[in-house]
Image (cartoon, rainbow, N blue to C red; front, top):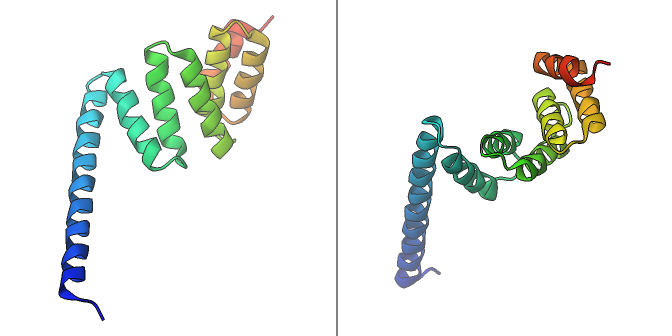
Length: 136
């Protein structure tokens, strides 16, 4: 038998949870808007919050990797691209961008391998990198 005081406590917990969730959503929207306005640091914060909430989305890791690349944080971008590829190895954009991070770390042979994988999956961008860096 549920006492009135238990039901009241449960409703208070639900209200507190809803308030926290609304604050989270508002914060995400604010950072998403800043990201859309060209603020990659806000994008990093935004996608970090989303990843903290759901680390099974390749989209979140890919978007945060893009933001890291914009601020030249190559190692963080590389890490996020590796996470995306661990979740789904059939992402030509992730393979291509992984090649970019490797090229920026002077690992051209590894970069060419990644670009070739991306090209096999249909990435036109990868073809440009292969032509520029790998064709000998």
